[in-house]
Every structure is written in structure tokens, then in C-alpha cells.
Image 1 (cartoon, rainbow, N blue to C red):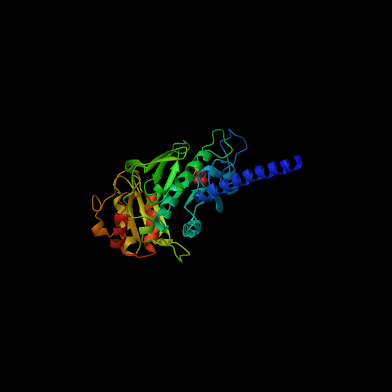
Image 2: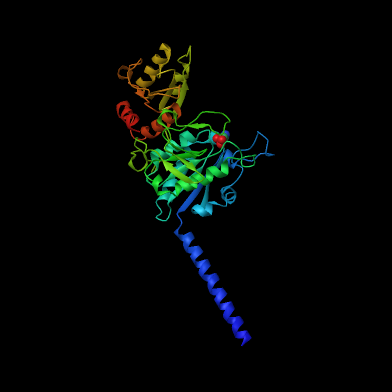
Length: 358
Ligand code: ASP
């Protein structure tokens, strides 16, 4: 009789455990699926000690980054993919194409709700904008990084990753283009710029402002970026194996024409001038720009000021010179749009139309 009672008890306890396990796995199954795509950067950096300023970017793999934030499992079913392990100062066209194709491949899967990308902060403004132009989906894509390596005292990476996954899993993030979250802010890829060499609060969206804010994974949304992006973008990297060379040339007092002529001689298909003020440069540089346009090179005038809009025909006559005005895009972002636009056309008028809308 006693034995039977024990057996009964064991069966009941077993049933409770099975039901609990089953409801736990149902709860996990109901969670959104987010893939973290890692590319390296300081967020995956390691130093000799927690107070050492020098470190190696991209030393830590995606699985370790995920393991370091156990609370991610409360937000989503998270898996990782490693696309590169580089400091983003080494970011290049090849990795961009690989990353863009990987994100498109992941988002095409019906069970993937969003993608979070870990990336160095140095060129995050370029990579995020590249993806904003070539990702063919409205699902959330969010980049994040950190200013302190993963081994540092008060490392900023883990919370940034947590927030990035929360945004990637949030249906309200859909249709807002590629986003960047760092330091509890949510930026549009179109607007974000790195503004400080070492401060944790280095990222800014300038005059355009934030798209939203987040606090421990709870998101607040302010706006939808107005420019053409992601699923509506005409830019595409399908079947593309290389991007055209586009150089950026920094204008300054007493600027010589030599850098412009040298870019043309070395095979640039496009040139972006980081002009002084409203996209201006010295008279000899204007002459070199004219000669470059005559050779079929597309020249875009941007500004080194990192604020305001570079419009056509203000102090430089774009109509006469056949140049393009970069509108809101800073030189680094103008370079990305020009590379992708050159895959479609070399006509400065058509390219100006892209700069007006993207
Ligand atoms: N140099 C680093 C990188 O861009 C800086 C960082 O991630 O904050 O990869």
C-alpha cells in the first residue's frame, strides 16, 4: 500500500515537472527570434586589465557576447552569427557586401523577427547607412557597439546588447529603417554620427534628433525617418561582387587641386569633397573638380561641418559644374550613397535625385 502511495506521488510530481517544462518551452517558443550578427569592434574587445586603456578590438566571439548577457533570454530566443572580427576602422566593401547579404538572408526567414548587429563605433555611421540602403525588409535591424572593451570596468557593451535585442524584438521598430542604439538612445542610420574619440556618449543624431529612447529594454518611439530606406530603397547589392571606388577629400584653407587630380588618376569613379562651410573649396580645387567631372567622375559636395544641409547652387554653381550637392549627408554617408548610386547610373542629375530623397 505504502509503495503504491510513493509511486502515485512520483507520478504526480513527474506530471507537474513535465507541465512546467512544457509551459516554459511554450513560453520560449512564443518569444520573438532575434539573431545577433557580430562584426567585432570594441564591444568585443579585450584588454589586459579592467582599467587598461589599450585593447584589441574584436577579440571576443559572438557566443561569449551572448553568454555575458543571460537576461537576453527574457527578451527573445537569441542565436549568434559571426560575420567578421575586426575593429571597424578596417571595415571595407567586402565585409559590407557579406553583411548586407547575411542580413537579407536572415530577415527572409519567416521565423526571424529581427537582427541585432554588434559593430565598432568608428564606422558605425557608414555601415548602418549602407544597410539602411540595401536591406530589403521592414523587420527591425539594429546596430550597437560600445566605447569600452568587454573586459573594462563599467563596460557599456552588455546593456547596449540587451537594448539592441529588445529593439530588434519590438514590432514597433518595424518600418523605421536601420537603427542604432548606444547609451539608451535610438538613432536612425541616416543621421547618426560619432562625435567624440572616447566618451561613452559619443553618438549624436544632430539636428534631426533621435528616433526613440530605451531604458533596460523598454522602448519609447518618437518618429519615423522621412527618407527612403530599406524595403522602399532602389539600391541593391543582389549579385554585386564589388563596389565602385569613391574617395573623400578634405577641404581646408589653401587647399591644392592635387588630391582631386590624384584620386582621378588612381581610378576613383566618384569623389566626395568634405568642403569647408556649405561644401566650398578653393578656386584651384574647383578647377580640379571641373576636370574630374569632364572625365566622367561624379563629384559630390558635402561639408566638414557635420551640421546643416548642403544645397545646390549656393556659392558653387552645381548646374554649371555638373556636381551633386549632398543635402543632409555628411562626407562618410555621402560616400556610401554614391558608391551604391554608381552601380545604377553615372548621370549626376539622377544621382542628385537620390541625394534629395535618401
Ligand atoms: N576602433 C573601435 C572600432 O570601431 C572603436 C569602437 O568600437 O568603439 O572598432
